Image (cartoon, rainbow, N blue to C red; front, side, top):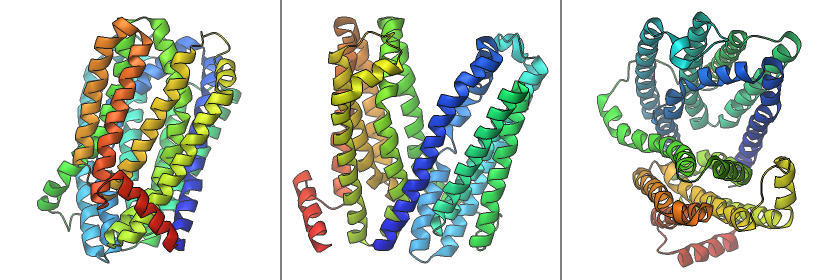
Length: 448
């Protein structure tokens, strides 16, 4: 058990560093882009980077996540042969999708006039096509990297993979900043830099896999349509999460903008961005415990699985309580400073929004029971139902109650997720009720 928590501690440190780098990337580079390029050119860069966003949203189509779990479970059961089969089959599926998208994108870029289609004026048509193509290649390369991370994770090298990714992001951040600040680099130069760093990161992870887990090899020797058939429903379940999340975020913005006004959208998006810090922190906890929970599940070690999860729930509850207390005490001045006092502050919207975000953080930690065991079919259905509740609720309440109606709808949607995700997770844990979970927690803590 101590070894598991040491691994979780190391993973949480690496995951935290990754989140910090993501925040730095947003805070440091965006003002630099605007200063060096100016809003018009930066706007065209954003348009071109958003063009392949559908592929990025789909990610690895869920197969990389399924592979990570299945390989982790197989190795925990000392079945390296099945883990290798899972790796090779998922590599073939992901590679086939990648080739298909590259071919379709290549034909589309060759035929369509990008500049006129996207209303670009400062970036030439040739450069625009190259930028989109390289962005797409980088996204598809990241899908291969997800599979390599699955290979590292199953053999106890998850933290090493996270560190490689963090180093890659740090190098990327420094190179982009230097090229912009000192050389006023053009968009094409930057996307070439991003592509090179992506290739180097993926290659480094491949070298790690080959040196630390030489039994994991790319190939077609273990191709099995049966494995693909079994894993496809699970992959589609995982794929539904980023898609429903995107529809939830963008759908809410579109509806509020259409039914209310742009000012309401600004208040909603800034408040949500401000409050999402709690979800980012909990995401670090989730990604840190995931491999160890899957390993315990693969070893049929129910006590270890429960203890890891209980400790994670305790940590998240402490984080949520601290977050809400901080919002109550200092949230308002920080928010006003962050928004330069240019937005009207609404107590009745701001403080309850912290509770709504906290509910989301709580159901996400309970969802880890399903994620870690590949039991995500019900989870995906709940996610879809909550999206329907959210969009329909906003449609019918926002016109009557304004942003308060949006807030109430979000509360209902998130509470729906918490209730059903928690119930399913307790079933997987073989715990009859929430009261039974707290008794289980007390018993496990007493044993320790």
